[in-house]
Amino acid sequence: MSLFEPTAADFEPLARQEKTEQITRPSLSYWQDAWVRLKKNTRAIISLGIIVLLGLFTLIGPLLWSVNPALQNLDQVSQAPSWAKSAVVIAPYQSWNGIRLDNYTSPARTFTSLPAPTGFSTADTPTTQRVRLAWDQVPGADGYNVYRNNRAPRDFNDLGLPLGSTYGDELSYEDRLSLEPREYYYSLVPTDGYDEYEVYSQLILTPALALTPDEAVERELITDPHEVNIGDYLTIEFHPLGTDYLGRDMLARLMEGARVSLFIGIVAPFLFVLVGIIYGGFAGYFGGQVDGLLMRFAEFVVALPFLLFMILFKIAFGIGPGESGIMPMLLALVLLSWPSTARLVRGQVLQIREEGYIEAARLLGATDHYLVLRHIIPNTMGVILVTLTFAVPAAIFTEAFLSFIGMGVAPPTPSWGSMCNEGVKTMLSHPHELIFPALLISITVLAFNLLGDGLTEALDSKMRSRD
Image (cartoon, rainbow, N blue to C red; front, side, top):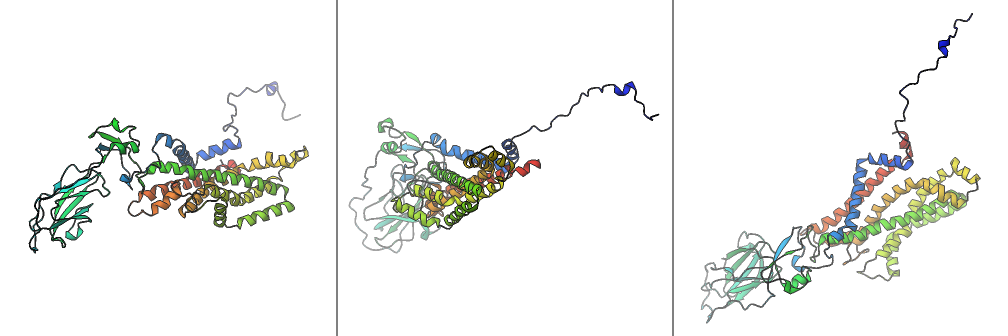
């Protein structure tokens, strides 16, 4: 007799459980899973946002900031970043005869000392067009020297820039030398006609920013000089990033330069990466002697000097000194930069071509070209995207370097590299002309590099099993 005897209850159906097993993570494709991992990388997402902002800065920025990047304003040369200013409308300049003494006679002798001049003041309202100074006669003086300083003089030997001299009966002076709407310290020193007396009077004033109706038309503030009256105020364009050494708006030139720098930095890598993909894909797939021959040629291209070919291409295109060499630079980058991508793709193809699905497609009658273009290269897209993100900053830096040494984009065409080259000349007195283009180059290069690091991790198929 068996120790266990089944009963009718043992054959009763089990009650259906209310709780069933659920899939906690939905099935994701390779690209969806990569995007999920990329979003977890804060640095990569911030870098992606910066790149999007740079694109908007380049494409949308000129539509919002419609200042002509080539418009020169020699009255606002190398201005620091500033907000909007109002300028008073004044009449066109008219010559001034000054103030002279009637029946003046030179002193009969030279005095050992003289008192400081009195009555040192302005003859009318000082503006950035001209400052007219006047003073009272100093008994015994036979001339006067006028000085201007941007700060308060410390002593007699620190009066500043010597503007000019007057002699005999002249008791006035007109200053028209690069006037700006800032505080000036004028000093007046009496002379005996040759030597100065060590006394002076000082006048502190700030010229009003002014422009004539014709100047307002030239600066595109108005369309007709009769639209304004003398004494009216116009809001002139402000320069949030300052102006350069020719008075051109830095923000407008940075936007215009971004088009050149990013055009070369994106188009050139796209083209030479595309060449490298096709070249490396076929070299890795066919292998053998074909692979050896193709890769030996790639090594030969790597050994070619880039700067030498850049010079040769400029000569071939007929581009002389001082002319922009955008096309020779683009051609040199495309023809000499593809081997690194080709070798990387070749390594990936050598591994992928041994996979089972490749052999299955070959048995079904797929041609070699079909296998390379349809199966092998698409499976290397992760590596290709990472390569492209690292190639873009390299191309941008190359353009900046070539423009900096005068081999790339030449003025007046702006690019970030050529603007840095111009800014170096005034970096001590006007550092903003160098800082802003250099900062944009640094931010762009850093953003693409950090995004490339993020894509390296996100597109790594081995990371999928770890999450």
